[in-house]
Length: 304
Image 1: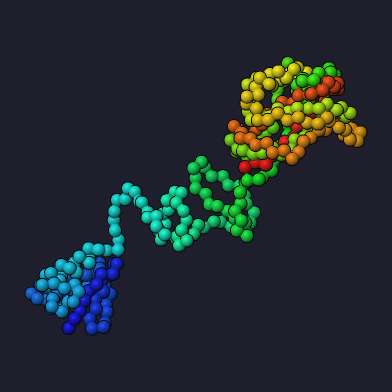
Image 2: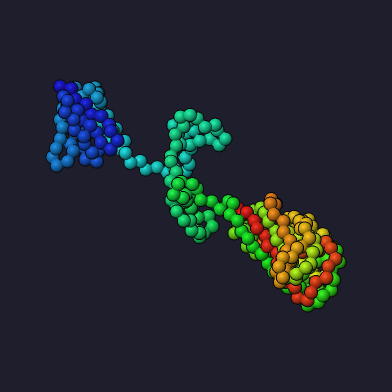
């Protein structure tokens, strides 16, 4: 009679003349008594054969066969190990891939799951938290690239009608003037974007100065830009300037509509140090304002 015992993960498989018994390794006790091998497996059950009946594992004695079966019991499906590093293979059927390695026609991998969100909402993770990618109903990935912001700031000039000379700054004070702070142009500190459109409006009708704006990603080193004073300090700070943009002469529409000048179809890249931009407004022509005019600067950006 020929019998065999084979190893199979957490079990051993006993074969005898076409019949098969699968036995959990946790239940097995192997003994050798005389020329016989005993395999006990719980509740008084056992298998007994002379060692010469074993075709696998085979041995020169009952002890040799019993020892070979004991080796199977030491190879369980549960392995306890201390792993300090894991270096996956980089072949076609391995999940690990080498950086800059060319993709193969038969490479395998693990599919990445993403979350379908028909209407994306802002998430508020802590710094360094893991996040799931989100797609719309058609599987397109939601991103913030290309989001458009329209932000602006207003200032009321001093209560005088002192004429401006070409190259003067337009601001809110003749002694403590500052730039226009365009807040939250980008959604996160250090964000990037492209300025696409700039509009300057004045509440005074029928003025037509050409204007120049100086855009900074931080408040310029000289923070005083007095109204009706030459813009020399602006040019001294130009090393930190994002762009200098000239606008056409202002035009007026219907009565009481004020005056406006704009440029569009621009593509000015910037990388902010915060979330705001600072703009200094300069006139390129002589003109006479009225007391307390309101000036408004609006910037349209595509932000990332």
